Image 1 (tube, rainbow, N blue to C red):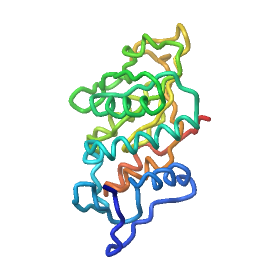
Image 2 (image 1 turned 90 degrees about the horizontal axis):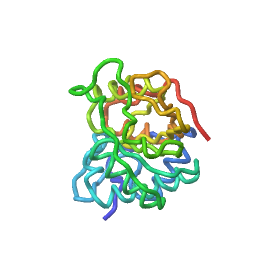
Image 3 (image 1 turned 60 degrees about the vertical axis):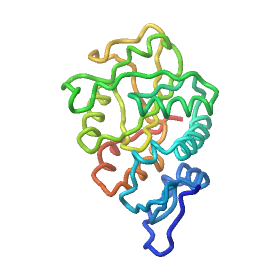
Image 4 (image 1 turned 120 degrees about the vertical axis):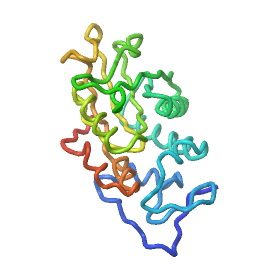
Amino acid sequence: MEVMLDTNHEEVHFLDQQHADLIEMLFQTGVVRYGHYKLPDGTHAGVGFSRRRLCRVKWARETVAQGVAQVASAKGDYQVVAGTGSSGLVFAKAVASAMGLPAVGIPRPYWPFQYKAGNGLSMRALEPFEGKRVLLVETVTVGYQGLLALKHACGRAGAYIVAAIVLMARVEIPPGLLRTETQPDSPKLHVIFDGGLASLVWLEGNCQMCNVGTAPLRLVD
């Protein structure tokens, strides 16, 4: 099974130099192609490519996790992989397995039905890993309003958020500095790359999603 380019449809070009390293890696996995898509189950999709479908197809999920692990390993030396919610934890476990690291799940306090102004991303589940270098793996599957809530809530914790199929962020937790999510000196989140992950959201056909967290962005080597 392979995600294939249908040459009968017009190509949708979303690759640029800024995204080249990550997108090229995903091209090599067979998950990402230009233009129209044929999904593993035989259905077709173009700019309406379903992130949820990709998250739920075991083959695609594991393939993406392998690629993400390769990029993450090249970006930094991590000691644990964290995922938010059930879908995020699925990806976190897959990425962690590929990297030979433990995985931990953290709660999602920021979706519209849970989100309250002023709350940041809860770090309580990371308390056992205080002082460790944590790689946060996020899956964004809740739509535009959820992305806005995610950006605002994580922004309270000093994050720069990218709306993406998987959101990769580095969480550094200095010993003794772990605080609750409502305190201004909570551990900071930093995007390690904005790469093609933001472009993958553009394939959803909702260009607004790409603009949710793309300014400002900071790369962390």
